[in-house]
Amino acid sequence: MRVYHSNNFRSGRKIIFEKEPCLIESSEFVKPGKGQAFVRVKLRKLLTKQLIEKTFKSTDSLEIADVSEYTLSYLYNNGYFWYFINDKFEELSVDEKIVGVNKKWLLEQDTCVITFWNNQPISITPNIFVELKVIDTEIALKSDTVNTTTKLAKLSTGAIVKVPLFIQIGSLIKVDTRSGEYVSRVK
Image (cartoon, helix red, strand yellow):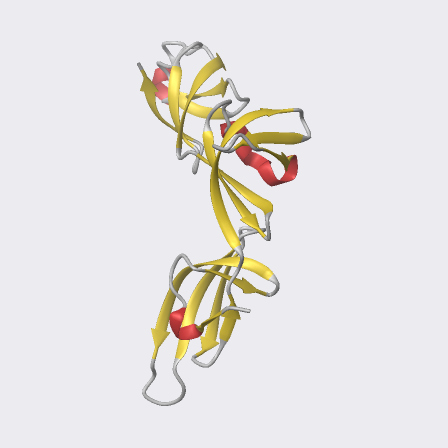
């Protein structure tokens, strides 16, 4: 069993905490004038995305998590499973609950990063920016421009985002998948 000692806790390292894989988001080594040194750490649980702040003694250690990330291409879904393929043409199916809310940002033939723990997929990260087609939007009236500057638009993947009033049905727009916000119109 490989371990990280608390003085080796660094941002980006993956460890097992409370029997769950976690990502160290930040760590701060503190050496007080009196008493034992300690490390203040912010951990993100990879399964639940919960953020934890924890203090470890300088003598503590945690097991290294067997976490790996692979870039795969999205193929299709059947409503229950989402299918991906790697560069060696090996197909992988991922359960819908793991894909979660990211399904609205997945386009066929697009790449995404899949995180594995003990050779099982635990999360999917789509590209940061995706280009999607607007399939439905409200019609903006001239009087609307005084009170509002945005309207709702439904995209080809089913996602609904706020867009400026000048966006029409059929427009191609760029969306930030981290926040779900409109970035720009694609020409």
